Image (cartoon, rainbow, N blue to C red; front, top):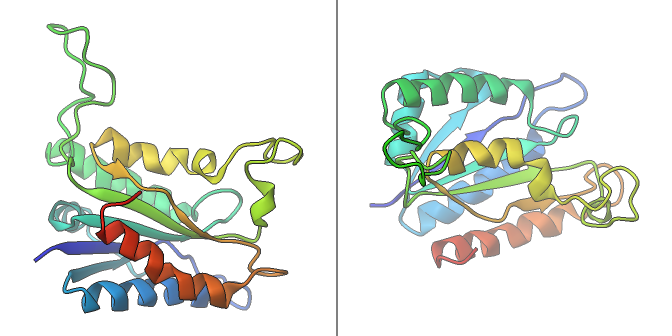
Length: 200
């Protein structure tokens, strides 16, 4: 049986950010994959975790989905702590990777090619206050033409470094002012269906 790992990075701020939307995306994914016959593994970082157990979850999973709000142009700080602890465990045990891929014997081997997570797929599902038009448009003064994939490079690079395939993210934009959250939730299973079909 194939397995999917759902990682929820949400950090609660009482009276402001309770996590309802990100939990809704997690539930949509959970329902979808369960219906398709996949075993669902879950981690809600805020509730605590064991780094070594998280390594094992990653090794078991065929698909890894990071569910995250975008706080100050990145995932909440608890996710960076999670990455440092989990990926360091995966490095020390050599379960995620063995070195950075380079060798003195073969100078053609590139940095970032020592990963052991080949065959696994990684995707980000993110919720934004920013509107979609903020990204990929050089006329926008803040992002200056950069896309969401640029914003998430610090996250996706960790998985690419370990050999996983990076899938195009799924984003829910403008959640506080003019977004269509209901439609984004409704369409999410279609994106998950594409993943199941091997499409990017």
